[in-house]
Amino acid sequence: MIWPWRKKRQIAVFMIAISVFISLLSPSVFASDFTMWRPMTSSTTVDLYSVWGSASNDVFAVGSSGTIVHYDGSDWSSMSTSTTSDLYGVWGASSTNVFAVGRSGTIVHYDCSD
Image (cartoon, rainbow, N blue to C red; front, side, top):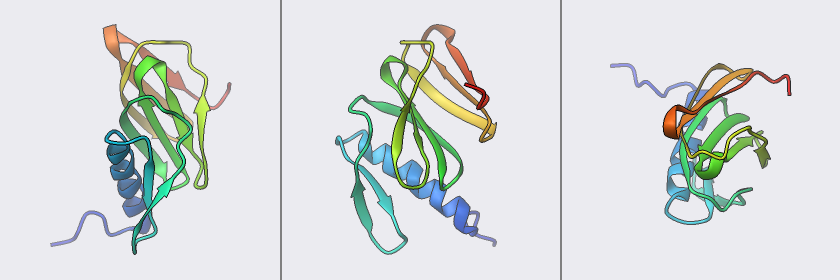
């Protein structure tokens, strides 16, 4: 059986996804260097509901009140959005083609042009 998380990039994205899930339980975000979990400073204090990344240095997380944050491999930064609706899901085909969906049929799209 081939383990599905065998590539380092996929492992990193998976670890960041877990860290965002853990951040729902506390205001801290955690990351792993594959030996131990360490706390990270998050750029938001709102609840985050979903995470997606194309690489370990290109991760998006979405949450309440239209919150979207991006991780560039070293820091989380807030991204502007045209909605204040809660966002519950995020997915992309690439780092420049990302969709977030939320309450009342809200759909926002990021294409790196703004």
